Image (cartoon, rainbow, N blue to C red; front, side, top):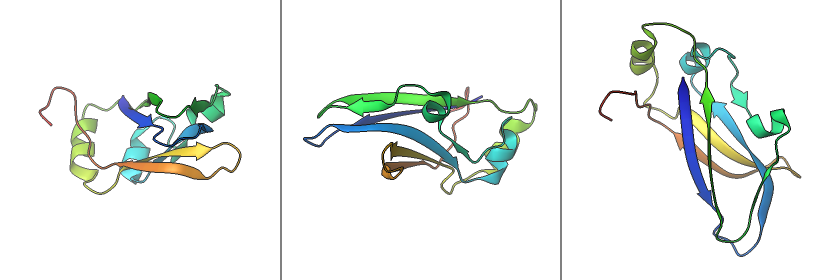
Length: 116
């Protein structure tokens, strides 16, 4: 399993949203390691879940778990072939316009049981 976590704060004086989160994988080795093998995933939008709406000063935290193929050497493959360039982009997409309100990058993988 590959899990992501994030937190976003509305630092404006206006309501933000509704918006949804889109994950974009920019590394083919990581995409090939996932069971769905998709470069773009927008869980809230695809499942019909309630979209995110933030009042001024409000914080939203979330994340997503990606299922990876079962391979005893997968951690070594990912460690050797993924990064250090930008691996995964997290975009916050406004529902009305389908434009990114903000975008953040994950550029490092940490493995459970190892020092980061």
